[in-house]
Image (tube, rainbow, N blue to C red; front, side):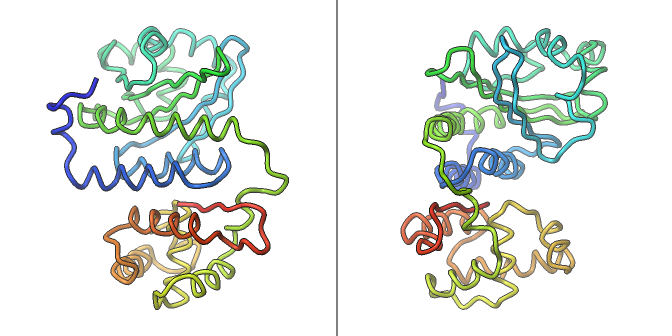
Length: 286
């Protein structure tokens, strides 16, 4: 339960980031796309070295996993994955108290965890030993769960991190319910938001902003969840240059940061549609 004391841990900057994340979760899009958006967006809110989403049916040993960044080796590729996960020290509290965030250190000291087979086989190869995680049960599909987990090395998660994740979880649950229960689209849901050129023309028709073509390209990739360095690599410019373009974009469109930019683009697509004349669905990337 959130109390006045825990809410005090959330400042106005955190609130703004939470609103940006909520906007991402309520935006149109396919499950793979939105789960990766969630992990990418969480990096700024709760810094971590590895984020993971798992859609799983433990009793049937079925799982779908999304990681950001993509780790090597993939934990789910380990031949003993299920045996090891079934003995995870957090299982007892995770599944008996779902829909709330738990830290690995709630149940076991880090030094003790490093002595477990689970750490040696799955965590040490990834270079992480701290974790905060939550499981969200699918009420319409008993035995099916969505697991969100963030990982770090050496620096444990704190109560601010737990509070922020707990505030976000109800929105994650609603997004999961929407993604799982909506009818499948005959066309790819992200097809309409896959091209810089089309985005540039759409933006020019729908928005009053005077963005250069380079700024439009940066905004496109920023809304796909790319970091400044990743945008720089894609566009063939330095990461610092991409950051400079982003900083010029924000005041032009009336926001303060990338979260505000994402929310604004989401609102525009929800209000005006995105390539409505030639696309069967609306989707955008962070």
